Length: 203
Image (cartoon, rainbow, N blue to C red; front, side, top):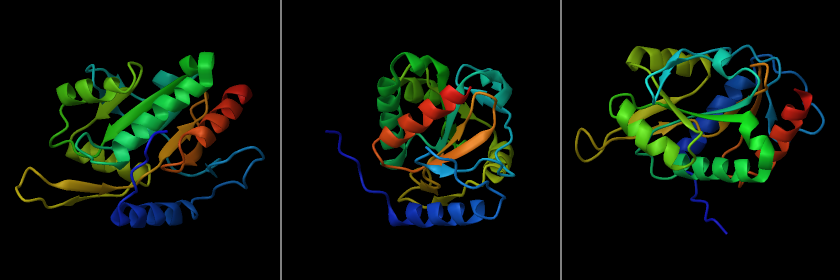
């Protein structure tokens, strides 16, 4: 059984703050069958314009027809990010043939270090279908604000060895490009797989 690494307290605080903000953005009442936080009707997370690790500019419209799982992290993250990516790999395995109808997006909150080349090595290592997305500092900040994502650099022993506290969890969009869920970090992937089946069935 895969070992899930505990989430740092700082990340837990940021997740709590993020969910508090989301509670004020007009989310609809939970729909039967969803196991994660229902964001249907939320006044956020409407779109982005970022570059993928192949050098192609991407928006949500590029993935219309697929359910999209969008996670904000960084390649040098010691625990939350690799655990999330491994869980998403397990989710696709659980979905079987429906896995081809799901797109995983990894958005870096560390554009200073996460170059296109680094993302191209890191993200597909978990699954060849996964895409890494990046922007410059201004674009990253603007996108994080739109998605109610909190991130903050924490100094390391050298200027380049910093870590980044960031919101844990992933946003889930239905095949029509509407934000529907906030998937909690560290549940092993079973709940997310179940929710994705519901969204794919709805079409």
